[in-house]
Image (tube, rainbow, N blue to C red; front, side, top):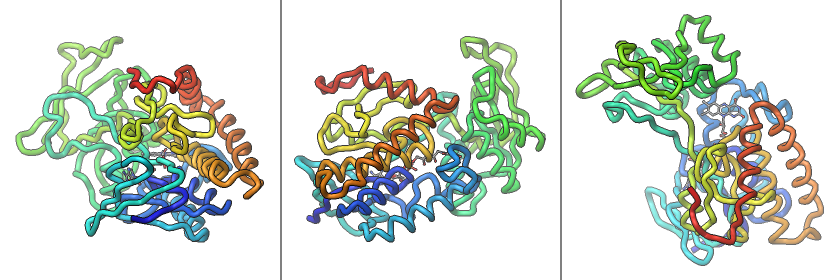
Length: 369
Ligand SMILES: Cc1cc2nc3c(=O)[nH]c(=O)nc-3n(C[C@H](O)[C@H](O)[C@H](O)COP(=O)(O)OP(=O)(O)OC[C@H]3O[C@@H](n4cnc5c(N)ncnc54)[C@H](O)[C@@H]3O)c2cc1C
């Protein structure tokens, strides 16, 4: 059994920023991540980031991960890799499992920055080998240098679908088409234009009906959809592909928060079930915070800012403002920057979700659907 003042679950941009801030202010910090490397989703992002100019816009995701890791290591915070937090026990105990051992970690404050998992789509044969999430394809290609296949059908034209399609082309994998159920492209047009210039068709108002193949994917059936997203009979066509890649959104990874009995609310704008939290990112359970995609699906820039707020507030609530007067200023500045990002066209949805969250009261510990 070990003890830490502030335990942080997840070493993506949110967890790293929370750790950097809390440790610099003067807290003893432990960051736990189940991967062999810090950075979360950033380690597979080889493209230059969009987003806020003050938050690494124009820098490759994998380089942002390295910068944040270096900053965290300089603080002397404890870093525990290859280790999954598999459970929470009362009162303040985390269960940590690695391939070697099971340990327990007690904490004074807890920041959950576990990110998100990829959504699936319902279609015939969607469990055939060769059907991947877009994040899995990125990990295979950009972290391990393995191509998922030779010819891919991408489902979803949000930024993830568009960026991963382009990265597939860069890896010499053919992209047969990008299929999108909405009547318009979801992601930035700059990414869509790059794909179109390479000859990749982006088929809006289309969906996938089935994966073809017995033991693995050998093709796909796509079709047009009407305004109610129902397949239009007779519009089916077959594509010869060996890989189907799903880029249809993410959902917050809230299992630990649910186990801790945090009050959970269903907010579609935030990606599904999220833990209710106040403007300091504190949940309905005092001393337990959230930051990043787990608090609502957004971007690395907002994850970094939320991490700063959660880290600084966890420090403040533990040590008091006399311990380091900088903490309050960090929170104030990060809140201001978050407000600016969320005023933009791509932050507006999350801003709406966060406002909706405040309409619920955490007094009732029930899941609202
Ligand atoms: C293709 C793609 C392109 C993107 N492009 C951009 C962009 O250009 N600009 C931008 O701002 N954002 C972009 N994003 C979004 C950005 O990557 C995410 O919003 C950001 O990484 C979220 O950070 P996070 O720290 O909340 O979660 P994550 O980065 O997901 O990190 C969470 C970490 O926690 C670990 N973890 C989870 N559960 C446990 C557990 N129980 N125990 C231990 N560890 C655990 C995970 O393995 C992971 O390492 C992109 C995302 C994708 C997929």
